[in-house]
Image 1 (cartoon, rainbow, N blue to C red):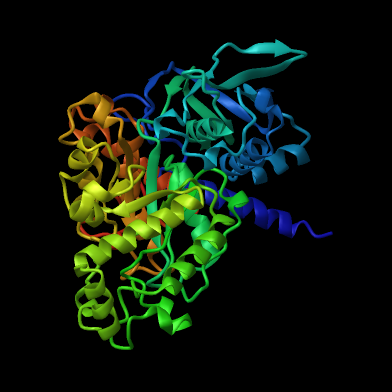
Image 2: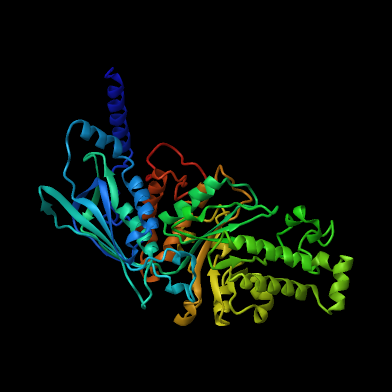
Length: 534
């Protein structure tokens, strides 16, 4: 057998090492004198000054009730592939040469206090009780057994308020562990710098969402899955699909979406013109195609049928019913609708309320909690079902009004958290505050969190990921990390260097994240340089 192929492989590896080291990808940058490069920033952490190597044959040891979790073990395998993606070829050469290097970390121990793998789909009575807190400690002590150096890394999932944590807190811990690991091209191994690390962490908000509009431009299922997977890197928890119906919708195997909840939206009665393509009777008339026909039982039978089918696919407790931008003008000019309104002494505004409340009743009958855009709250707050979650989007000040009336709220102010607004820079996403104007702590708890929105008029498969990232990550830290930890200091010094590094991490994981400091999203970088420098 010719030796030339092996020479070629060594040459390629050497070239790859040279290029990677030249572009500064081998180890994380120092930030203000230390290596605090995690994103989002943990609640509490300390670190030392040791460097530990991680065994490519890293093992998982699971303790506690959740020891048999298939989700956790699958996630470990996935993260092991991410952490060691650059070291596989080098480990082959080590084996060929008969060398077995000694590593400091060869086992990851995870302790989970609950084996309830369905808990990720349950909102509970209060989303604030969905605990994802965890403690991670990379122990610096090196214990020698039969000449093998090893250090155990513990991911310990805590209990709070007698509510057992699930494996999903451990998944967040695996993400943190993966960010602590960096491949060192000089040492030719994966390293954990500045050990020992002690991290105590939990999310500030339970709802940390990303909306993905699949109705304006078709997105292949694989692209949707890639986006959902990338959400877990920033510890976003809720993915929302807006679905355009020709009585077809993307069927995602939710077992593959193990680290986030998936919530669907059907926007009714407005933004539903496409429904009539399948069933023309849903249109009030050929010239009045939206809002949907409020007069027919058939309309609500179709809504009920769709929600019944979707309940089999989307087990998450929240379901978005839309209700925004409903122009009822053509109702009053359509003869049979006009007659129906007159017979009930009802205005078009009251018919809009009637439709929304009836849709809410249908959703609740399917054991869903209804979410509606803020127009419903602005128009008839006093008549909304008390379980309604009000979704802000038009501007600031809505969540304070909603929680004052006892409603829960999701923050998505379009001025700062709409990703399709391409001229909104990362720092606007970062500094937006979901509880702005809410001083009462008990009312602040009614804010479930927030959601950045990727509306699809100007995005398709070719550019959707670079429109989402890295600006969505800026909002993700606002939703994960305590307000006190990230609202002080100059964010150009405290946040920007970490976000620059996180953008590089996304790129290395195959996510097409755009440069952080673009003045306009999706603009290509100018000139040569590493991802970190851009």
